[in-house]
Length: 109
Image 1 (cartoon, one colour):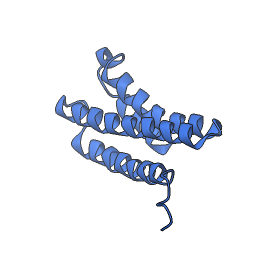
Image 2 (cartoon, helix red, strand yellow):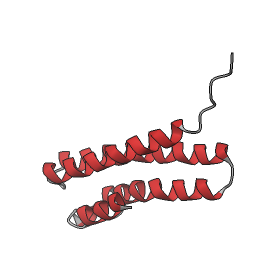
Image 3 (cartoon, rainbow, N blue to C red):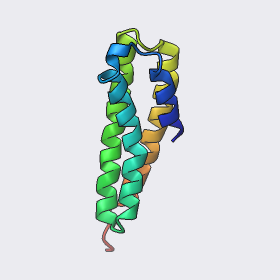
């Protein structure tokens, strides 16, 4: 949730003509991560939960890419993007751990 808040703050300074472009894409990707976790957790099925965690992982990759685009277009200062990318990477690590927790245990021999 903190990453979502930071992404909203960072995109406030983007050009107005990016409101429906990169600004929206960054915000939607950031919001998608916790939203998919919440939706999957409420479904009461491990396989559905895992599916939503996988979608959240995709959104994490999308957000990281959009932040890089923001830097390349000079909408986002590199130091701000770096801080967001570090947080994004940390969220990705947590999501990967959650995703791995759903894997089947190895068969007993």
